[in-house]
Length: 130
Image (cartoon, rainbow, N blue to C red; front, side):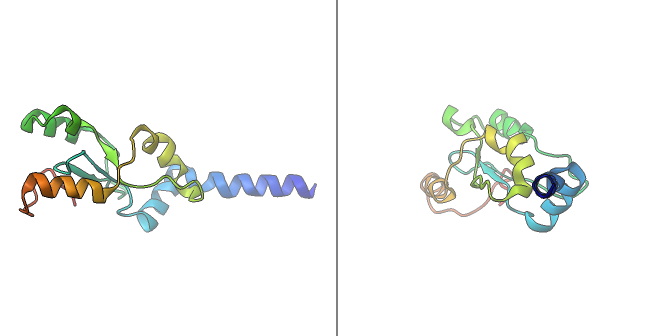
């Protein structure tokens, strides 16, 4: 009986934070600017809005960026800038639904590419959220 209670309690602790409404609330409170994405050279960046009225994750911005600026093919791929940490069980829903579809790239590596291509000009374009 105790074993069953512990298992049910563990499932509740792991599953409850990943229910859509509860997950959204936790994401707004804890992970406001955690979910960041960028292309390889850093000229397109995306900070996922976690507010309750946000439309959700979309790659349409990268598609419009690619259409309007015609970057090289390697700069048309979106990378996630956050590590997937299985110990953060309240993020499992985001990891499974969105994060696992994108390869990870370190922001420092992207920043070096952006600085080289931009030649020291720090002016942000309309395609950069951060």
